[in-house]
Length: 428
Ligand code: PSV
Ligand code: MN
Image 1 (cartoon, rainbow, N blue to C red):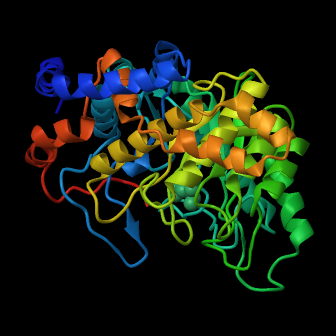
Image 2 (cartoon, rainbow, N blue to C red):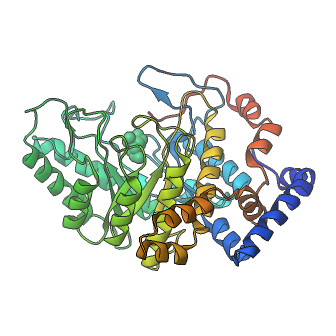
């Protein structure tokens, strides 16, 4: 199913009056603060978030999965779904593949399809956290950390294959997330596990094309519950620093111990020039994979505040210099609606963070005026920027209200008619 330009135009006609009023009010507010609305809209409109190929089907928990029907049956259909999201919001212009869940058998044809939908390929992801049917050796006791060299070699070879798949599609980064670790005290020699992992990563790093980046993703716990071999940002940074200039830390919002100050982590990684990628989601307890911004929107704003501050300090391009991706999918929502909500939450937090009066904040910080510091941040956070985000989307040819259009067009029903009600997408 494709979203037609006339569907978007028709919705615009219906909603334009209301939108114009809201936007005019917004513009007035920004004018009063001497903020250049057009420059702001340009930044918001340029921001793109990659969609992971494994989030297009219904997510699950270890207790079950409840597919909603019309799920993509192939990589081609996944790309078509991302194309549809991008047509609606003009902010989902990239797809991130997980290998071997989504192997591009005919890279040229896949690339052509993506091009036709105005999509590029974001970081490719390797998978050594599951055993595949045709796999010789098991990852039950880890992959890159494994005590048996031949298991490590198998995992290294897989990562190098993933880079090759990515190269054929024009991707320029690999994300390595390892479930390696231990579940019981004494099970692992920590130093040996680190060394084995480091040496394995070095081999993969050695196979990186010149312009490529390697993202080392950390996670505090799950599936291992006593230790994770890349368990926090310190360990990830240690690997990235030892590996070299092409290696970076990747922050996934769901991968911390409760109440971790993620915004501080982000600020310091940026300061070191070692923040490479970002996985968005939200959580109440652990790696809950909930819709971005549904539980802790203020934390999301504070993270964006540090991202912008840190990126601007290094002269980085907000859109292209970090790998932005959503990493979330849940059991009880239509996955496409969930993704539309996530992208919207990201753009709202980004827009609010762009509104922070940085000069005033800096002055308040330097004079220890804690009250003003809070006021300045919350003034930006409490600004309703929805009309601004909608205007940016409209100027890019997207829908004023993507989620509403998705529902009005009954997209899910069309997908069920097209693909069937019992389809199950590859993924977790
Ligand atoms: C692991 O929890 C993770 O965040 C990694 O990014 C994986 O690639 C992804 O989720 C899918 O399992
Ligand atoms: Mn992740």
